Amino acid sequence: MSKNKTKLMLGLPYYFWSAAFVILPLFMVVYYGITDKNGALTFNNIASIAKPEHIKSLWLAIELSIVSTVICFLMAYPLAMILVKYGKGRSSVLVMLFILPMWMNFLLRTMAWQTLLENNGVINAILKFLRLPLIHIINTPGAIVFGMVYNFLPFMVLPLYNSLAKIDENVINAARDLGANNVQTFFKITLPLTIPGIMSGITMVFVPALTTFVISNLLGGAKILLIGNVIEQEFSQTNNWHLGSGLSLVLMIFIVISMIISAIFDKDGEGSLL
Amino acid sequence: MTGKILRKIYIALIVIFMYAPIVTLVVLSFNSSKSRAKWGGFTFKWYINLFDNASIMAALRNTLLIALLSAIISTVIGTAACLAINAMKKKGRTIWMGITNIPMLNAEIVTGISLMLIFIILGVKFGFMTILVAHITFNIPYVILSVMPRMKTLNPSTYEAALDLGASNSYAFFKVVLPDIMPGVISGFLMAFTMSIDDFVITHFTKGAGVDTLSTKIYSEVRKGIKPEIYALSTIIFITILVLLFLVNRTPKKVDEAKTV
Image (cartoon, rainbow over all chains, first blue to last red; front, side, top):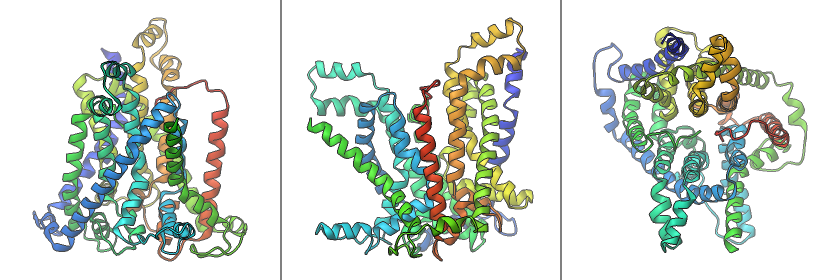
């Protein structure tokens, strides 16, 4: 019994750390969000989400993050299937594809897309050479979606990879033996078995995409404001922490919903990132 | 057969997608024109100027120091926490794993402003320490989530056998438990180090005036134009890691199958 107690004591630094720097800070956001500068209770901060410029940036953020989540899913699923098929037990391809690029600063990588996507940038030069139609997406919502997909694709691939790798090959073989063709096997067996990974991937992409302010700032030409940009400005320029916290609380509703969804579908943490 | 070729093409396209910006940055580091938009000829001058640029060097030092310290501290706290969480009953374990997941699932901007607010309330001076605390906070979950799966596969009898044979608690831990969970601990440490180096958003909200990491320095320069020395530095860092990774993969692996990617 006492042996168990010593073990539980080992967690003390962590209990303290989580309380002080994870839980308490979140309550601070709530506190600031529901009070005004004099400390009086108010719901004006939260209600200000209904202001036209705020609600517009929230809708745009929701729209763009849904689009990029869908694109990430469509790109990631075949990729994860290929990776599982090719290199069972070899994670080096995954490291090469997704961990290694992280060693080039993420702001620089996103900025580099600016150079590549520019109207007279590298990609258009190539397209011109191939006599294909040119793209004009820089400083448009399209470029922001592009940046989101680039930055968050790994968050979709990794959970899908993990849940695909767990599928027992015999289940697939059984479906084949019973006369299912490739398409049927995929929709009746593979896809349903990877739902935990899919849900986890969706939340892992949707939340950072919904809340980003960096990607929209770098690729949207600083003219397109997402809800993340509005909040960031309240903190770093306007210094209205109460309004910023109130808007963050609105954002947290979406985050909490995602957390609940991933908790429901991902009971034993099998779809998690690591 | 065509399936195999299609698969290869698909992987190749994803590789191009992931690496196009990196290649761009490497090319820019050799571009003698300061503009990102045009090629002014090949040069090494940014690599030479780099080491005379005090502010970039200071930012590099902060970045590496914070990454190293936060990775070490979060690995120690996180591994100890795993031992504790593993010894809990089911209910306690669910609660603490849930808390562990908060910084992972929460939006970075919310984590950033929540830490900023707590530092304001506590009256702490913003600077190196506040960044370090913030980085430890978001790094601990990465350590726990990579050590925990290893911990679960441990056979508790080996630890108890060590105790029965007269080992002290700590001796049994270092001789029996730690070697078994080591792959998880190492990958947790590396993950934490990488996350710290790459972080911008949380650092942005928890840094004080005058203290910069590479990320925040880059962000502040975006509008007025990034100094090409930064491209040179990033290229050096990237190539270093690439070479290290290559060397590690070539040496025969003793500890394989670390579940982490």
